[in-house]
Length: 624
Image 1 (cartoon, one colour):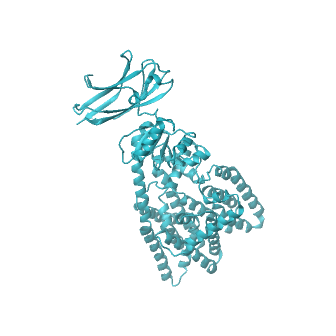
Image 2 (cartoon, helix red, strand yellow):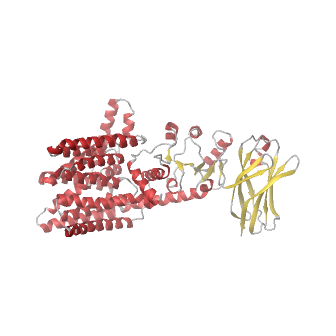
Image 3 (cartoon, rainbow, N blue to C red):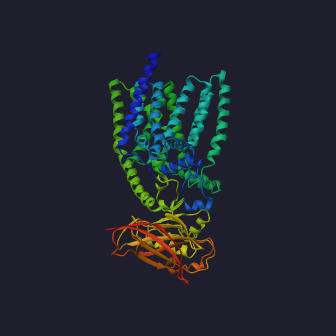
């Protein structure tokens, strides 16, 4: 008994080593990072689950907020986010933590593929099938992503393993296991209930002695999981822009039926044509060939192998049909949605190749298949991985620029037309990711939430927002952070936001809440300076503001004087509680000596010409 377990341990250790080597090679194609829309959505919802206990996303569209309120749910099924949230809770909201579930699922799936192939065929077929699984181009690609595909593949493989065992040695735990896995898979992908039919087949073939109890356990457990877990969590999912919902919302059964037919024709036409784009069209061809091979296996094989072929044909064809009828998929989405049913086909393919005689020819075909998959994965997936990394690098650059200019204001909601990674790498920030088409839509958006900062890439757009805020056409008294573009961007913040808190009462009526100012400049350069004031009462006096630089001897080195907001907002018009962002347009004296200067703000009563208070708000380094 001990030697048998030791032999099994060596077998699975060898399989794990094969999968780990394949994972390491795929990793070397490019250091994996979160990139792309779905990954980012998964990541931010997982982060919110771990840190806020909420399925709300932090990436929003203005139209969705205006229609359904703020915040709102993600459009994906919540099951995979629960898995990611566990990784985030354990290891923090990092790229590595987001990749970990897919990498673990990749390794675990290889082990399950080996178990199934060994059970149905033989140990050599198990090794070959596990290697083929690990080298399959799409599986190789998704192993180092934060996508749901590999976790779903593992759930589907676990279901298949339980199903096969239930056919051969049925136990009541198998009926419970199938119910649990059906619920778990349905929480990740709404197409997973196609596996219900194989479960019913296994229960129908159950021995008469325990059949009634098996059915009862399966039904009770399935109903409890569906009603207590799947349905409540699924209702947290936003409808989004899926074609399925668009057709149902037509409220016309003929138009809905025609829409589903059109979807099917469109999807079928994509698969009927010759492959053109490499690699994804050729991956689709590979999946089609795998389905044809399973049809051969259904005819040529017997026993467990034939049951596996029937299982694969049914689940593969049904999943494709459901996707074709209910979704208008892009080619890549259709391919990755079929991944959960592909592993049994790879097992059947290797089982058939291993039966080819003479054996030398069969082994040669198995090795040729593996070499082909490895070459396909290495050459075919290099382009998509490079695109992911280029996208990540570009998004990272933009996220860094945004963070450097806005993090000091601690924004909760940023209106930025792009900036995906900002929501992932710098927490917690909600990103409104499509710029409103008009000021009217902007105002409607602001009725639902408070926007703290805005990112634009055109000066005219920045000036339009500043003017609209000044005239009260939008809320927030937005002011520009930078006068010149930073890496092509202009940043605006809400009027009561500031980089450095001051909270100094200057006189009986005014409080200087905070300031924005540069840390270091060269003599002769403009000095960006914004003073954020708040009126403690209705202000009666007309105050004048003085800003001065003091050297290390506390001597005045430079001096500016003026009324707030370039004399456009005299203080005697301010009302109690009003916040005013007072941006100054001043320049350092070219003859100013290098050194560290203290910035001092003083308030004068214009009528009496008396100072009512002063405070130092920070230091400025003047450089050579």
